[in-house]
Structures are given as structure tokens and as C-alpha cells.
Image (cartoon, rainbow over all chains, first blue to last red; front, side, top):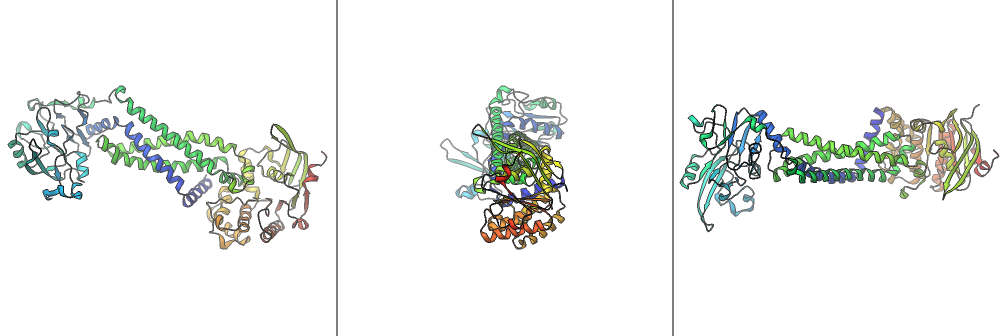
Length: 384
Length: 224
């Protein structure tokens, strides 16, 4: 076994040194497909996993939210009007409450000149949105910095960002700007004292509260609690942990499209790996013939090909999982990917890749079995 | 003394365009240990097939091939690989070096396949490269070597596991006269060191030094 491994390691290292392009090509093909498959396959799964993580890590008895937008009690945690409403940061056990999508306010980095919009590079530090998007059907406004916005501004949990709240008139002409400071994410706290024990709001700038009141803009906030029996006096629906825990995946009828796309992706991965293995065996006919002539068993040849391809799959899976974690999911779905979820996704990628490889290798083994060593070694190298 | 290699009534046929072609019928042949046996004959006379039968690359249609008293035609896949790796060294007409490996690593391959200890294997590679006069080219890849140099590396590779039998199929067929002489000289020296060398060739330069010369035309027309 040891000697076999010494040969395989030697062979794979020398192959990589002399001709890295075939492996690189295989990886470059594979990892975007894996990323897409993961994205589509887990589009409904990740929010549920996140919620489970939140419930496991949070000490709060209940979490409240607006009573208008949620689709239903068992789905409300995740969706308001088909938009993500909560990001769970499991290490803090906090919920990021988003009444609407465009919570991304007019933000600039702290201390920056308000003339930010004049330069391209400054614009890169700005996330903007429209006030109208912030207003719910009840005329309430939720304030928090979205995860995406925080990420784009390179801000972490608890960091502060400066805010420009710009009010335009009907003709789109600027009426007034307000500068404020916002925390990146909500945290539980003693926001109101007394009856509002446990209420936390994102806004920490009291001047901004005054600004909202002056312009008759009502605001919304997420509430956390562990002691009060009910939060109904705050015109909110409160759901117990048990109710939130009951959130399940939506029925199959709602997700068959993404599942079909994911299955097509898995098929594509299988065909891609099968093609790679077939190309490899075809392109290495001469080398395989020489190795067999020198006394290599078919098992060694098989294992060498398998390990070479498995390394490609592992590298592609790793790249795909990073893409999945940092780009695709958050861009399209806006969910926070926990490290454990990422690890599961990586494991699934490798499992899909290796299962496909296993199937592809059965065919490869059959073609290796059909090779005629005597014919291969008698041919000029250019004839193969 | 019992011959090292025995062909007992070996027949070999193949199908070409739905027709059966008989290459050998009931061939009997004995090769003694330490012989320098030369197979002479025109192209297509069956020299390579005879070597391939000894190497276990092909199986005869009928009959037995005994090597050291063992019938190699009855070996399973694993046994035949072990036999090739431990008891045989094969020198090919087209050298058949692995392009991704340098000269030293090409010689190392049979040793790794045989499970040799890495440091001992490296030492053996150095010895063999010295033996074939290729030490200065150990880090060169096949594409950077001349035909004669490639064939010398192939000979070193064939000797890697100190096999009892060296098979050489037209080893000078792809070389110029000078390199051909170097290669034949090496094979002769290998034979003088006690190895059994079986050589198929058109080249008559080694005939005078051979212990046995087999003319394929005569051999294949022998009475059963």
C-alpha cells in the first residue's frame, strides 16, 4: 500500500509540474457549476438552517415584528413580501429586523464630506436607497443597516456608520439632509425602560429621532424580550420560540423550479466529470500502457486517476463553497451563511463530486481493461 | 538443466477481417538461463509477438509458456503484473519513456511499483544511470534527450528491479548506427553479467556474440 502511494504521489506531482493546464481547466469548469447548484439547491434551506441556529443560540423568549407584512406565522421569520427580513448572527444571538427591502439608507463612511457623490471612488462607499421604499403600508419606517449594505461598506457587527437622510420634494429636489450615526445591527437593550424593557433599536443618534419626528416619519423597531408576557400593546404580533421553531420549508410546489435547476446542475457536474475522466484516460493511453507494461496493476492505474480527479474536485468544491458563501447567496438571497452551514455545503459539494467520479470511473475502468498493452507499446508516440 | 523459458506447443492465432490467421501452431522453444538469444526475421514474422507472449502482454490461443517452471499463461492479472515488474525488463523500439518524468524518475518508476524503499531506490537509480553512462542527464526530460540517450535510459529502467530476463524488441530500430552500437554493447554487457537477454532485431551485429539465434521463418515452420 505504501509503495503504491509513493508511486501515485510521484506521478501526480510530476504530472502537475509538467502539465498543470488540464487540471486547472477541470477546476475552472467545475467550480462555477458547483456554486450555482448549491445556490439553487439550498435557496429555501439556508433560511431554515439559519433560524435553527438562531433559536439554538438565542436566549430570548420571543421576537416580535410587524403584523402586516408576514405571509404567515410559520414563514414570517424569513419573509415579508418575499424579501428577507431577518439576518441571524448566531454568535450574538441577535436578529436584524428588516421591514422592507430598501432599508439601505443614504450612507457614507464616518466623517466623510457630504459631497460624496462627486467622485466615483467615494460612491463605492455609499449605499443608497429611497425614502419611499422605507415606508411601509402603515407609514412606518424601520431603521437598520442591512447585512449587504454593511458588507459593502466593510462594516462589521456593532460598527457605526454615518448616515445622510435626504428628503426630496415631489420634483426630486433636495429639501433637507440629516446626518446621523447608525449601528450596523440591532442588539437587545433597555431602549424605553419600564414597559419597553428589552427593546432595542438600531438608531443610537437621538438627533435623528428628532429629525424623524419633525418630518412626521414614524419608525419601527425590532423587539426582543425575556420577561414581559405580551408585547401586544406595542401593536406587534409576538411569536413564541415554539412558533418560530415550527417554520418549515415551503411545500414542494413552491420550489420545484429551483430543485429542477439544481438537479440539472448535478447532471451537468456528472457529465463534466465523466468527460474529464474519459479525456484523461484517452489522453494518457500511452502512459497507462507503459505503466501496465512496467508491471503496474490496473488497480494502481485506477487509483492514480481517481486520486488526481478527486483532488481537482476537492479544490473546485473549496472554491465553489467560497463563491457560494461570499457572493452568490448573499447577492441573490441576502442570507447570512454561518460557518457550519458553509462546512455542510462544502461537504455536499465534495460528496456530489466524488459520487459522480465514482460512476465515471466505472466506465474508465472498463476502457482501461480493454487497452491492449502490446499495441500501445509498439506504436510511435505520435500515433497515440 | 531445465530451460529458463519453455514454449510447449504454443499456438497463436488472431482474427483479421472475419478470417482466422494462424501465426504459430504448436511452437516448441527452449531458452536457457544466461543466454543471449537473438530472434531474426523479416517484419511481420512474429518476433514481437513471441516477446509479447514471454512478457505476458498477450496470451497464446493454446499451449503453455513456462518461465522458471511456472506456467505464466495461467497467471491472473495481479500475478502477471508482479511477474513483469520483478522478473522482466522490457526495452522497446520506441523507448516508451514517460514524458512527464525526467530520466531519473523514469528509471525510478519500476522500483516504486515494486515497493522499493525510497532512499534505496534513489541509490539504485544512480547506479543504473552510471551503468548506462547517463548520470549527467538524470534531470533531463525525454524530450530533451536524443534517441540513443532515451534508449539508454530505457535500458536502465529495464534493469531497475534486477530482473532475470531482459526482452528487447528492435532496440536499435529507431537509432543511428553509432547509437545502435552503444545500445547493443550495453545489452551484451548485461548478458555477460548473467542476465538472459532475448533480442528481436534485423541487426546482425550481435549475432556473432549470441548463444542462440532463432530464425523466425524456420522456427514457425517447425514440425509439431
